Length: 209
Image 1 (cartoon, rainbow, N blue to C red):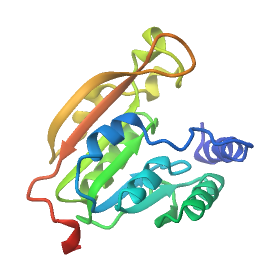
Image 2 (cartoon, rainbow, N blue to C red):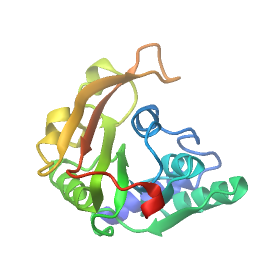
Image 3 (cartoon, rainbow, N blue to C red):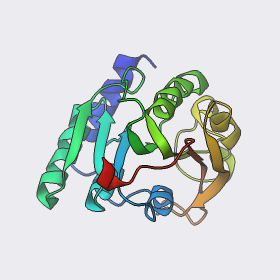
Image 4 (cartoon, rainbow, N blue to C red):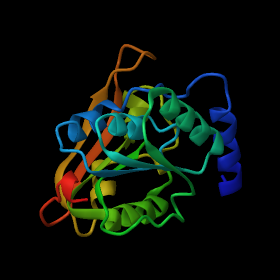
């Protein structure tokens, strides 16, 4: 699918009457980042911004990036309704260059582009991490097609722990596994890839930023 067609598809989806994903954070993002001290966070391909909004509510300085204006409009409305401060950036994550070494956490959740394009986004994410910063990558695993439920059905764009970790060059991987996530679609759980990695160096406290 061409980038313009992809954008039109998501604009249409996010232009529907209801929130596409709901407003609760992804359970694995919350599991990893919830215990950390707030700092600066970057949510790449944020959609409506559920993870960025959750981080902002915890005191993080959150930046949310997506190419869908309809998605960002929804995120801004939700932020205004709840008095949350999020920086919303309209950009394609394949082209977006975040501030280098600036973020204590970077989230990439359910971004399915294929290995080469994913590698580009991962390089940008890695460069954006501050010393000691944490990268969280979560998305539909390739085994979800046969053994899980929901999600894309094209194996060429789905994830494996190995596909993600092989494209991280300078981070220490702390988790790389397949995880199960219960949905309301079926009794069996969905199967996701989860990778957590950390930049070298000591994390800078939020009070120092």
